[in-house]
Length: 426
Ligand SMILES: Cc1cc2nc3c(=O)[nH]c(=O)nc-3n(C[C@H](O)[C@H](O)[C@H](O)COP(=O)(O)OP(=O)(O)OC[C@H]3O[C@@H](n4cnc5c(N)ncnc54)[C@H](O)[C@@H]3O)c2cc1C
Image (cartoon, rainbow, N blue to C red):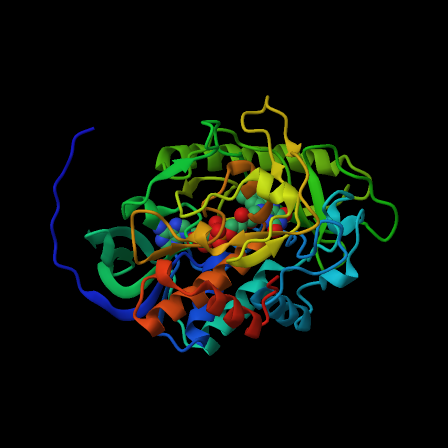
């Protein structure tokens, strides 16, 4: 590949205490939390909507926010607030009202008690309102491109905005891109897929249908098609076929994956039409963005392991809990997919997993934190990513307040602050 040198002086969007890159479940919660702690916050999102996979990916329902057996809710805080507001607008069903196996869970029983079905458009509206109320400076259609670093620290970032390349500067940066784009460009060691060298988990292009005749019996569609009922009767989210070997950090790989995903939508729709209850269903929308389950992971101060999840290890610096199973889809269509191993009733995630090695004023939240790939198959669910995002936002705010680096944050204080803000902290 030939190379081109490029140099340009950029206008700056401004100076912030905290810059959050990526407005998915983790990023939105990070930004709201930091802003509510009194910080000046920039939130940058590449697409035209907040919510990431929950909206642009049409992914849902929110997998369980309860412990493994569905007995006690272990993810609360901003997740709860968001769900309550979407429920108020009739856009979600509260998790205490759903059970498994049921239409809410595509009749899957294991690890599926207490999911939260929701409507992605109402979620978009609620997230818009919440970031505005918190005073977050939000830029949609703006993509993080690069970091300018000095001595292992980000000095400023380069963004591709509709007006062209611009810069921004902050005290603390939070990478919520779902790809660890910021970490990778800022000197943090990363790897893609499994730490053992296996490919990332596959991608799926979600779609939705309505006009399902679910007043009476409906059958379970043939695998891999799974239809999850949405709050509105007769409408379903469809999780179905997979595209293997996708590299979310490569434009050509994403292009081919999305095109293949579109073909798969048609094939799966035909399978649905042949399923009792779905005979007259119509596609209402296809996700604008393909859902990539796994991309980069970062090297952080601690790597969360499968053993930690199995033993239900309670860390001293625990900032989030989860009880969902380790859901690892076949990585190539041949390896076995499904729930691997067993998790304890509840396990915790230490703050150190979000503190990267190699860049001192960066935090990473969401599915890319430092963890074994199989372990990430559990907490990468959207409620888990929201809890991580909220914790990163609170930590960034504490770092700014104390004039210290994220790695120096007093984790006892962080846990207290999160508890005060409604998070479930053991
Ligand atoms: C196919 C599939 C099915 C799934 N099923 C479920 C399910 O049923 N229930 C469940 O709870 N979870 C499910 N998950 C998991 C869950 O959706 C994700 O793990 C979770 O959304 C990750 O949250 P995140 O905030 O880390 O990243 P994302 O949701 O990926 O959000 C990242 C955001 O950053 C933006 N972004 C990316 N790069 C840049 C950049 N350079 N500059 C600016 N913005 C950028 C993206 O546009 C996006 O909005 C599924 C995931 C997939 C892919």
